[in-house]
Image (cartoon, rainbow, N blue to C red):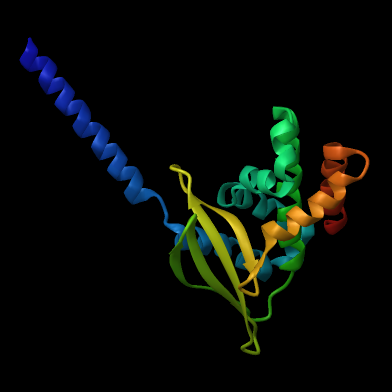
Length: 203
């Protein structure tokens, strides 16, 4: 009987290790996550006119939600007030912030004239992996955009974006959010402002 139990434990361990290895092998790395996002973004650019702003938004929304760690970005952008929020308030902020991020990409990348979206390398940093990329215009001008990704044990997700290689979008948003939160209306005002900005971009 003990032999059967021991064999069962060994087999269970083997299956667990096989499943874990399979997940690790199947999960895309940080560069692959950024490239997959770029593939959808480039498709939007090439079909921008046919899709329209709302069509581009619809294509990007599920990709943004899976590729970006929006709850983390929301928490860091809100700052110390985050701990005082109710769970439903946190969800509202993350939803509104996700809408704003998606609407921004849908409207800023609204055409195609030969641009290339290139992932050019990655490096380990203190709190994750930095993926370096470039948007190369048709005239050859290259704009650097770097992404910080973190492995959350399910997949690699983007937690910050550095425009021109050095300007943290998370720091910029935190400054903007702080300004709104200091005024009247608090977190409800912030949610309203983010939704209004997203709506304005899509019209």
